[in-house]
Length: 260
Ligand code: 13P
Image (tube, rainbow, N blue to C red):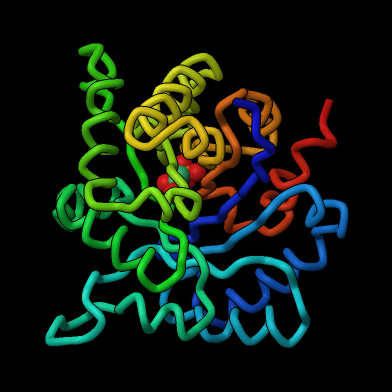
């Protein structure tokens, strides 16, 4: 089924930019993006928690059509969870997208597939869109188990999610060996995994859900690699780390369609 899927290009700032730097970055990014960019592409930024309120204020005061995103959250609405932030708190700041299950959180902070699933459901319950991250390690790729690993992460992440919520879901394929390493997956490898993700969502729900699903690729995306990745049939967007910290570089990625 061929469905029009709007591209979504997201900047994951990770633990970079204090709120002063964040304000400067978002203002410069807004200046760099044209109305033609906004007509063609959805753009989101995912700053650290301490920047969210400042960025929300800038986006709303200047009517800037960049979506505000977060990098993670807890699944409970409130409670004794020192250091955590709830989906309701994020929704109150007009956050519309939340990255869930990033490999850095899985590896460094012990997030399990079950935690990811609880977060996916909690984010959806607040009317926000989870960007569910999946991806294999280098060892898994070399052992030929990439597709099995990704399928397993995806099915565990989606357990209990209703068909009616399928359209508010984004999946990001981020091979762990490509994150922050300067090594991007080849277009063939990215397409193989992203098409498998779409097929799996089709089996999980139906062809319409699969056709509407937005799938991002992430891992060392740069302005030079963005056009080839965005040409792939099953890649509908990009989840950008390092290159999103520089508003000039990130704007060139958003303008991928103007290249070649
Ligand atoms: P890099 O673009 O820095 O490789 O990071 C990718 C990523 O982890 C985005 O979530």
